[in-house]
Image (cartoon, rainbow, N blue to C red; front, top):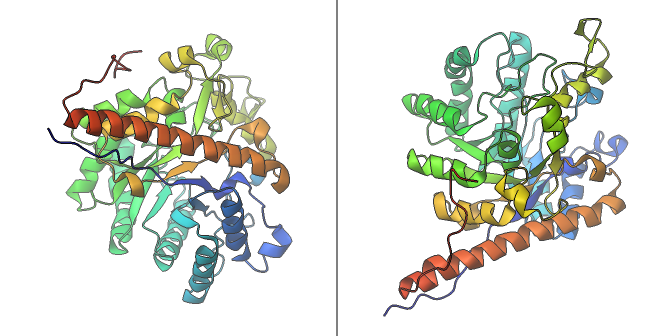
Length: 413
């Protein structure tokens, strides 16, 4: 009888640097932009993170959305007001060696199908700068959104994707990069009524978009950076999503993860349903979108009226919520990834994305133990899942010993 050794494989665990947006004071980092990366690598080492997702964004003085209108945290930890030269890259590489922390990918989360041609061109130009910085740092991928042209239907956006987004993927391929799409529907991105403002919000569109990419020779570039919080937001569950991808022959699409949860407020669902708050949010005044940027952030009440983001480990263990898809079952999430997807596990990052509002303190000493605890939680959950998978699927299977019980089943809660 063959005997398989017990050899669990673990995913690296990291953190998105937007968790602490101004770790390095603005007056210091604006004069010395790479100091922000050095400081974050040192901070990540203190948190016992294996890697960071390096946040890039247009500098606040150049952004088209004012900071007070944003609810989703972004940060220009990677400052690209000036070209990212080889000298800058060498400086960051020295910090990587000194801290032992890696860079999983560079994240630039913006609307790449913006309806205004001038704004779109500005974002695309910046994305190309992000691509070049990723190459200079030897990073394998860039993570971001597709976005949506608000002047077009979703069906028309498929055409816009082919004409306007595929060229970006061709540029990524020319540089040897993956483009990892996060699937957030971005309901509060605009003051309009649309809940789905990111075309690549669900497996059905991932597959449709990938087929377009295949026609243009960039299918190997287009990948998904899966975030279970967005599945919960739309009433989905991880196991069913992964099973659907496998059933359709697309189990290869996921190549990275945000470990960020969502906790559904049943009272909010009773009030507004899963479509979110549609009126009275405060982003409209006298029947038209408010001109005050501070009011624009109220558009996010489409989502926050019935759900709140979870920093992994901060929500109560709630088996009933797991079964009703009202909270992320983290252990099953990690098991399903191993059981159903085609992953190089040890090279697939788990990135903690911190968007739990009450815990988003922006002071280093106070935030450090919060992030440290969440990173430890994500790592131990992954190790537990890895141990279960190795024991059941490898050790017991090799000896013909059955696994006990039934477990969670896809398409059923």
